[in-house]
Length: 489
Image (tube, rainbow, N blue to C red):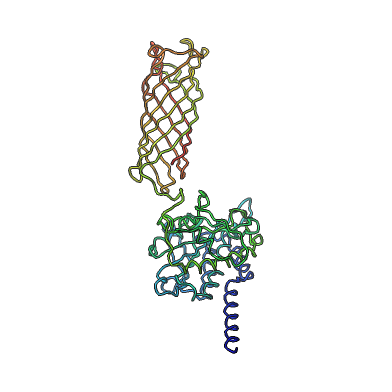
């Protein structure tokens, strides 16, 4: 009986410890948010004194919690932006308890920088970035505290990182990826904008398909308090990328945790008083359980799947395009260099062969419908007849790409085209080929454009070198100008 009583007391104490370790302090979350997102931090712009003060605050919290420093007794992982601006990730480590699995890392990150401030009409507008991303940073600090309290239950080592210069282009996480032994990283999670659970009514896990059996694993994790979790295979946002990007490029499983874009995103109104602190507490408690469970999994394996926007440039791509623009006739040896423009449309398919990082070869197969106008008499100010042409055009262009990353690039195209005109009418009356108009046409094609993931936008010019209309004295050529949209597969 005595032994049973002692065992019961011990069990109660153990359960109390576990529950307490999962019960994040709302007051501490409030403290972190109001500190990091205060006006005195001036928006925590990378490289600023206020950004450095934010880093010191996070470092002091990591020290107080008892995290191991990143390197040489320092929590700072410093790097330079533009070769002169010093930035720093703040990194703390909890070593795993398993003699084998502790050699593997789970990285939990949240960026702490934001947009700084602006002076507008003599007034200072401070972008405090409470949700983006003081919320994730506060959750990171309290997650560190909770995990440290139960570190004996963590088999894998957990690396907690407050990333700098995310708003500059994910530079803090990019630098970390260049410094760590990649083969040891089994999972990365970015907590970015997690302060609006009440408004969003859901916690979104993006990127779970990058982990083998990711959906099943997440569904199996117990939830300490009722919280609605939405699971998405991939992170597909173009303009709101987070710190998972460069981990994914190295083929590591990486999740983005967020409550979505419910806050005043990148606006001065993103303040600490608007944060849902009760929801943030629940999210932090859930992440404590999530991280512990992930640290105990026998294996965490990359699935081999990446979101479309992360796929590296393929050797062979293809897709469909549609263009609208204007078409006009060009006259040689006259006072009037070109005639009145008419509507033009083209659409079809293309292939793109990516030869090197900066060069591609692009053949296209297009249908064209072109309108133009030609004077009825030798007097070029006389009324003009409308000419309508249906044609098949096959451009071939050499593409010069300026790569931002494999999926975003500006480009210039230079090449030629061949056109077969198969139908032509003047004022609705069919024109006779080889008497009024030529079947065959060739010329130069120039283009300038931007490709963003699977969408391509392009300005295209086609300037004929061979004549279009048969005329006894004039050399009449066709010029076409298009704005093109294309979907790339």
